[in-house]
Image (cartoon, rainbow, N blue to C red):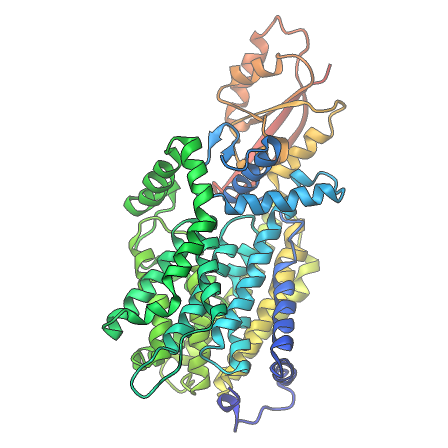
Length: 579
């Protein structure tokens, strides 16, 4: 890797020399490399981990289902309020529930409604994904290159987002990259003419099958899908699939079945087979056949948003594409392309699209980018190369302007605390472009990674907490906590976000009409109802007609903000009966 930047003197004041020395020192051993990766991950993942509100809608759905698992003691059937949640296997719920139960045992106050505890498995998954990317990259690159590749992946926006969301995707990515790292060692170590390396060791085989089994419990067929598409493409290239026998499928399939079969049998018995009908028939095939949950988008969408989701490495990855195509017959490049291309095409073809679907492919993109850097393939003299590299600047500059605009528009504040780091991130991104133009691509990547490490605490740690308009559900929960009575019954009319269920409680009543809300408040005891603006007149009329109600509801507060899920402003009024 040193050869990429060798021979090009760096001006003493360019500001990148210390990054080069840091990478060189960390590359001295695997322990140092892993320590630097973990430090980078914590800088990128921890800001906002506690202060970020439950992010509708998927995160609080997972967290609430895990909370109900604790409340009921049922570790087989997955529920969101009274509805069966038969879309994903049980793995993520078990892990989240275990963390929260452990926190309760340690005396953590309000552990069950502390969203950060449910995010701990995602944080661990993101950390493991980073370390497994380093391990996978070592099959293709020397230690220094593997370290930079893993750092480039760890700094990308998508894994940074998933690390602080209580969902499946960070753990899925860890399982996926572990399995693909093991598969890479089998592929590159297979016996071919002129090469006589033996079978992979037992550790590599166990990593592969354990990653497959845990991945199935986390998100069903996704890890086998990534592995299967890559293995099929490589077997077509090889004109044989015999190399896969080095994975010892007899041992591996038995181990996988021993891990995953008990729960699948239990849920099939308990649900009468409904789990498989919902998970396969409605969730998986529904996404293939149409745009599930209004997440439809045309083919090419993932490619279009790639420059944001894989920032800060996306521009350099795009510049590596000609190198990958030219060397596609090389065994290492062929493996990485088999990891990326078939699954990417499949996701582009499926109507339902969410940015995190392609996250498990991004470690391969990072490794491929560093292979191109190591072989001197990122040439700023190529037509359009400098313009593509300049795209690195768009994200920090766009976020700086956008966050200031949002903060002023909705909350009439300027995020002063976050501005120095936001501007520093912009400066680091500009320096990355300058270094690339000076034919120092590895140092350009290092500066781009630094830009991400500055951006994460600026956005999530210092700016996000002051954006009160985005925290609608926490502010509603605070109104409930401010009532002069314990454990009030709560209902909501017009606002049905899962985050409110998670924060208020499983028994939150979802109301349909103003008459329902008035009747709910008349049910006796301490009661609170939230009413959105479109239902307010209807609710007031229903309240006026209810003449036999002994205690009239009183307004106790109003919350205005921005609903991230709907993309619209929302206004809610709170009414309470406090006998």
